[in-house]
Image 1 (cartoon, helix red, strand yellow):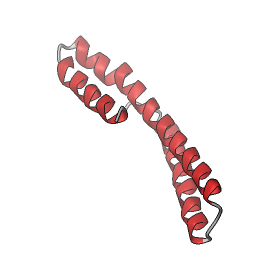
Image 2 (cartoon, one colour):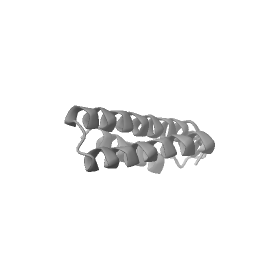
Image 3 (cartoon, rainbow, N blue to C red):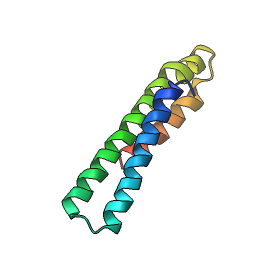
Length: 87
């Protein structure tokens, strides 16, 4: 992985903390809208992480593969991820 591991790890730990908070909110029967807002915040962090990883993958792994003539497999991988993101 070519992404900033420290940054990605910090963001993942933040998302994990938010998930733990969500579990407590559900267990404590918190207001539905509060839970939903927390879910949206967690999804935003995960989306940001995924964006950064894919951005770095394109700039490093795919670029390198294209320069060495082995880019078709990497392009197929990106297309598969884009298909999942658009569903």
